[in-house]
Length: 93
Image 1: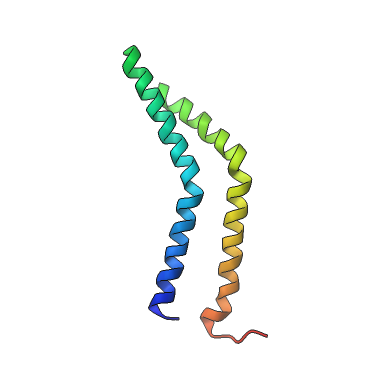
Image 2: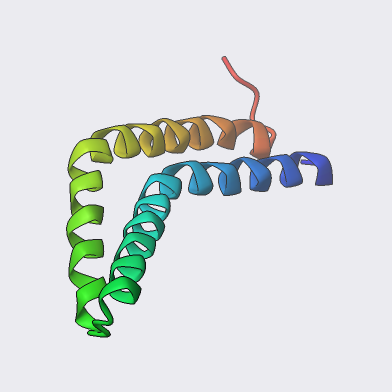
């Protein structure tokens, strides 16, 4: 296995992590921004006020997109396992 193939494999793994984690991170960012704006507008500086809405929003995203995330991760894992014989130099039948 060459260095180029290893770099390509690592790049694919990082891309999968980014694609799978992006909906959760964007949701947490958006909810945090909205709550921060509301806190600034109302002068309420309660720290737990930002935590609870983020957790609820992230759980909602997991409910709606969890199946897609699991399927995508499973397909990538299967693809990696199918590449093992090529990496070890074992000829395919």
